Structure formats: C-alpha cells, structure tokens
Image 1 (cartoon, rainbow over the protein chains, first blue to last red):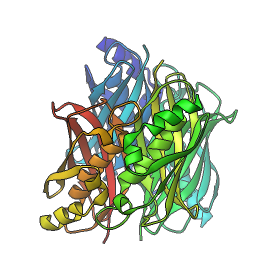
Image 2: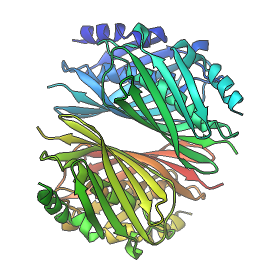
Image 3: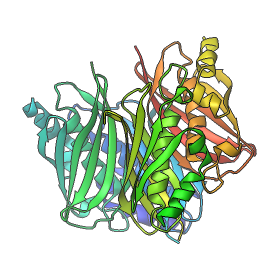
Image 4: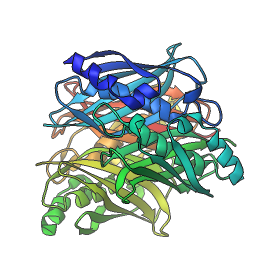
Length: 128
Length: 128
Length: 128
Length: 128
C-alpha cells in the first residue's frame, strides 16, 4: 500500500517539476520536503505562497491516500507566519479526523531551524 | 503604478516557471491565466491543487498590490469543485474589503467554458 | 419541501434563543435576519463573532437543506470587515457548487445599509 | 492583566447568555467550557455549529487578549468532526504565531471524553 502512495506521489508531475519530494509516509501521516531555489521565489524575492501551499498539499495527498482509499482534496486553508528566502522547508501532515467519506489533516510547514513558517489544514473526500 | 504591479508579477519566478501569467489588473482586481500542460498534473492525471492555488494566489497578489501599498498574503482558503485535465484556467480576483492594514479578496477560478473550478478567498496584510 | 426546511429552522433552538430568524428560502438560497440586541454583544460592546457566525450558519443550513437531501455542516470560514453595535444584520446564502455528496455556499452578511459586515463560506456533507 | 481579560470575558454578554464560561487563561492560551443544554441544539437535535463556534471564539478572544494588547477577530475557520447532543464541551486555545500586528491560534474543541469535536483556527488583528 505504501508503495502505491509513493508511486502516486512520484507521478505527481507538478510537485516533481517544482522540486518537492515525499520523504516519509505512514498510515495517516506524511512528510514532504522542498529545498528552496530561485524558481520558488515571488516578485519580492521570498518563497511564493503557492510553493508553500503545494508542499503542504503534497504531504496532505500522501497522508490522506495512506488508507487504501482514494482521497481527493475538497477544501483547505493556509496561514503564513514567516517569509523565507533560502534553506529547506518541510511539511508534516497528521490526521486529526478520519471518517468514512471525509478526513481532515493538519499540516505544519517548518524551516530547517524547526520554526513554523505556515499552518495548513485540509479536508479530503474519500471515494467509497 | 500598474506598471509596477506588472513588473512585480513579471518577476514572480514561481508563477512564470509554472506558466501562469497576469492578463489584466486594475485598482482592486486582476485576472490571471494558466494553459494546462503536463507539468500541472498530479499523480492521477488531474490539475494539482497547488497549481490552481498558485494561479489564484497570483491574481490575489496583483489585485492586492494595485493600491500603491505593499500587500503580503496572510491567510487564504480554497475549495475545489471540478477536476480539470486540459484546457485553460482563469483566476479573477476582486476586492471585497479594503481597510488600512488588511484587505480581503474573492478569487473565482474558472475553465474556458466559464465553469467554476474553485473558489479562493484571501486576506492580505498591508504595510503602512 | 420548503415547509420542511422552515420547520427544521423553526426548531433550531439555538438560533431562536438568539433572535435569529429565517426570512426567505428557495432552492439553493436563503436569507436570515438578526435584530442586534444587548445579548449579541461581546465584552467591548460590539456584536460577538459567534453571533454573526450563527446568523450566517442558519442561512447556510436553510439553503443547503433546500434540495430534499439532508445536509450537515462540514467546514466553514468567516472573515470580519466591520464592527456593528446596533441595527439589523442580514445573511444571504447562495449555492456556488452542488455535487452529489458535497455542496458549497457563499454567505454575505450585511447591515441595514447594505454594507458588507462579514463574508462566510461553508461546505456541507449531503447524506446519500 | 489576566484580571482584565477575565473582566473582558465576563462582560461578553453573548457568551454568558449562551452559558459559555472561561475556565482558564494564561499568556497565549485559554480554555472555555459549555455544558450542553436544550438551547444549544439545532433543528435535528444536535449542538448547533454556531454554539460550537462561539465556544471556540471565546477561547480565542481570551488567549489573544492575554498580552496587554487589544486583539480583534479577523478571520477564522472551523471543521466539525462529531455531532454532540449532551454533555460538556471544552475549547482549548493555544498560540501558534504571535507577531506585532497579527496573531494566530489553534483551538481544539473536545467533549468530556476528550474526543475531538471540532478544530478551529483564528487569526486576530492586534491594535498597535
């Protein structure tokens, strides 16, 4: 099963194209990583919100698809706390609610000094 | 002023790298566009949530920086309605509240048939 | 059908206890009203966020239960724009997406001068 | 200082009218409590979303006003996991980010068996 998630994530071309990789996944949780490069920056030279969101969303996708049921993103929110220009970002997703057709995950995005950069919460729809 | 926004957005390397472009901006509103390509897809072959979010976020950035005050993303939420595999996506941002230090924007993401693909709402912090 | 919604809402003791009433409902939309009184105020004398949220949530409940399918709140967000101390608040809900098992509504909360007080967006789960 | 917060909360007429009370507050965190009664229920006999939101919002108000700076709610989101009909609900707020003009809090709402009923996240504006 975990193999399949890894394949699902490995086939995520948007994540791969943007240098985002899955580094860990287990039942209900996952961690993704992004080494900040020039292509992640916005017009004022800090990491674009979309890059941080995508990193968090990949962790969500892996965590929510870890139960042998296909899960698709329904709704999510993100709040930004720190602007980053370089270094490494990590997104750690953990399940806070699992029901038959919906599940919710908290994803903390941190930098290499373990400072909180953003908080993301996502709810997925689980295909019966 | 609008010239400066266009430069700000033109310098957004993450958006440019992902094929997202600004097509219109005026005081408090903006429209961005993304022609869906293979690098926008996720592991199951539909447009990745992060790509849709980034498109919406670029429209937010342009609309919120259209008032000669620097605006930075504080928090946002997105809800997905339709999965897309090809075609063109548009994100239209409009201001729903403007105060001295915060402002909020509604961004509708539609496909080329003008069907709603996602709804995004973002609040920015405006630097005094 | 609309009769049943009106009963459902009329039986909402929390809304009734707080002076919130449904004034209109049709397929996919609804409007609720609250005349601001002393019991709606918080410690600094403005309408409590929870009162505004409850008003919006009642409009959501009516609009989302207008299709002969039971709908229950899954997730919602609210952003506040104006502090009110007296007068009348209205919440107008409209459907922006309807699918088999989930639906999403935008609810605008306005005062008696038709100024936007808050924006609420809610997603419901529809029982098959 | 904490005395002042307690007064601020004690003067919250909406919370008091709905049987919500603050049971603990310290710098950056707070806990509120609500004993479920008939007036908290909606039309199908479960606790109304607005009641749960108000409970969480009161914990947010106490936690965010614990730093000798006035904080007002800007935006928040809530996701519901469990329907409750009776018993006691608790809302525990903790600060996840504190900056000069904005701060963000995670509020977990649990029942008397310590099961997660809802997750709330709120961002406040801090008056300089």
